[in-house]
Image (cartoon, rainbow, N blue to C red; front, side, top):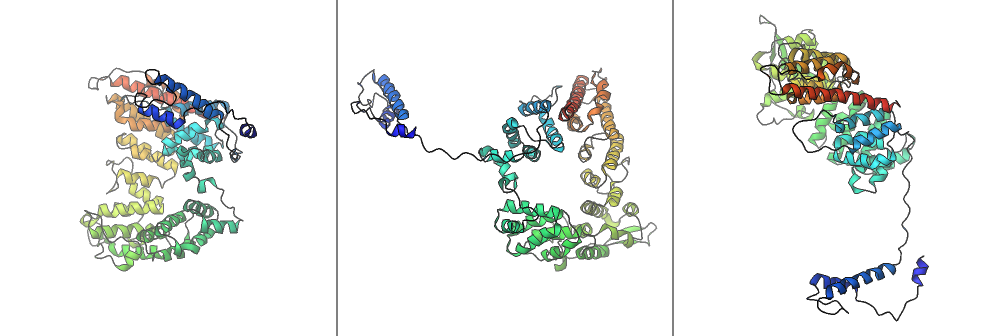
Length: 543
């Protein structure tokens, strides 16, 4: 084909027309100011210009020599996983096609498909499915617009997502999310390849490598990091150090102890935090001694009382062990230092220091001179950091207690963190009793840490509380956050039991106008969403 173009005869008797540049100039200036070459002036000039442009366009296209063929694309890496059953694939296409419309201030009774997409992806990933190839562009478009979808969407898309991202700049987030833009990491036996990637790779590749090695061999990852530690940038050292949280153990202590002398304050602080999570570490012992000298029980009073003598200075040793000397604005220095010492001290040592008492007994003791809030808040942070369920239970208190906020300074946000240290079943049971006692107005943060789907007692407590709110005449959108959680977290099997709630009821005398109808719509949407979730799971299972 190329040779035919190159050897085509040239007809010398055809007069050359005006050049393309001349025609463009005439068009820009206007034919009244610039007559096209070879065209008569006057009213026929515009038509002559268009005719000449048409002829020149054909001439340019006909005489164009084709360029060299581009190298063919390398095919995407194979994905051995099966695609979902056909019905599940059609459901995914429907979920991806749904787009939020303009807000009207009131939701319809139809389920929110955009909120069901994360659940569909999570269920498909649990079953080991791969994305149908024809839906990959829509899947990547959805993940581009919603960062919360990206981990599950990219896991579902597999290696083809990286392949497509190299062809479309709008999907470049997939390259950033994959280690080294999707490059395969060296395996356990590829020592030389691992060393070369660690020493020469991009930062994202090195983080991915360190994380992967840490997951299978904690000691090997630590040795890899130690080999180049002195030459790494401070911000890189901080990121690399954070990878040691996975599989943290006593063998990491010597490396972390050396990191306490790092030039970067952030690195020193992270190393101290990791060491304080090791109850047997030397740093934990030093912190326990410091904190113990500040907190004691005064037995001379009629009721044993905890007394606190906060540090009067932050010495060099405390700073080396991660204590930040400068307090935030509005915070007293001594209370700031005390909180950091207590937070880093092993919780297991307080029983011996405070008269052999259990965590529940310690938390129940009065605290002199208004130090209770500071002390309990520090113990909360320690219980979360050290994943200590005994102290978490003591600080949580009874869910049916009169005060919803909890004992001392234990706020709802802190209670949510403490709940995260408990087993899933115990967590759900605690929140169910809390809701039955205090209602839903304070429960949103607590529900967010419960395992999905909610257990039957927790789901029943939430639905009963919503029904009570309806009987009280409130508008349902006052509880829209909890209702949204219920749509995503209730067990789909509860749909049949909730059917009775979908009927409209007469509004009580003191109810907000129209509240009954709005509640009926909200429960209709809840039941419809639960049934749709059940159908999604059945389709993924081939039903």
